[in-house]
Length: 156
Image 1 (cartoon, rainbow, N blue to C red):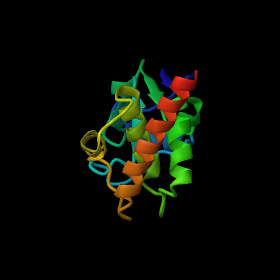
Image 2: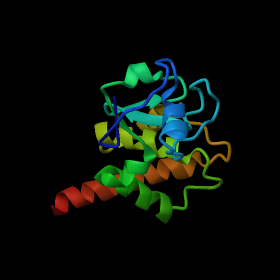
Image 3: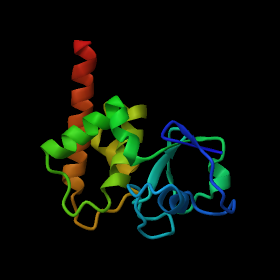
Image 4: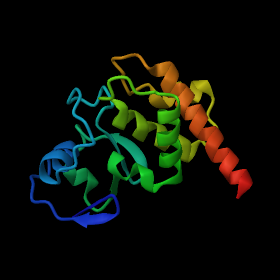
């Protein structure tokens, strides 16, 4: 039994099937992208029990009984909404293929480090490749989301 975006999901697959293919091919959730298939590019990043993982190399057995969050549920969180707003405001996306993984890694960073430095951002995002080279806009988007979240917290 998997818990995907807060909902229990029963899947009938071999235990070594990568989570990526369960999400895309079995559950029809295509927001998580296939990039390299070796866990090197970050396009397939999802959260498992709150931690960013590469779903292309994570067997479904390793995620059974754990909570999986995909990009489809990002707007359900304050951090996710702040990131999406910053991404749109700063026009972070160029081709967009890597962005679901970028957003998931950024969300994990901001959940643990609400006001990250450039170095912390670069370290957290180092496993996510953007072939279009939008790294400065990604970093700016993370800073913008962090500022928005800090402002919302002060106003609350």
